[in-house]
Image (cartoon, rainbow, N blue to C red; front, side, top):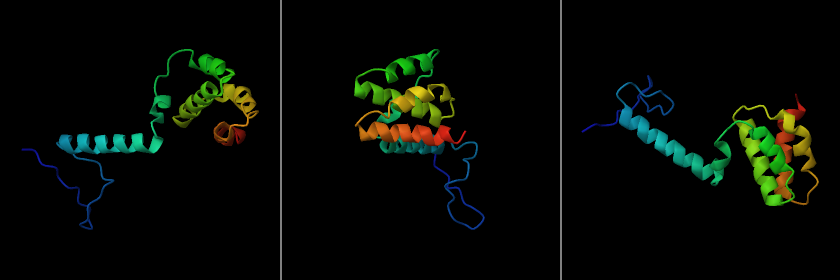
Length: 122
């Protein structure tokens, strides 16, 4: 049976940051599964905002942000922030996102603030 090799640093301690060596397929799969489950727990089920970057999504997000339904608007801003987090340029939605500040919803205001922190310095 395959066994997981421990990565030992020069100091003789386990080093969790060391890259797995060739042949550590089982260990790598286990580590990735653990990592993925931790990410799901940390995001509280919001991983859906990090998926699918199809053509025309900026235009779709602009329409969703303009939706009068505050839950749909909040989801749209979450998608924009998720795209921004992974490095996609969403600066063309600046005016649309800033207009979302005109709400009593504190969560939506915090999301807009996150967006502003990123693009206000550019």
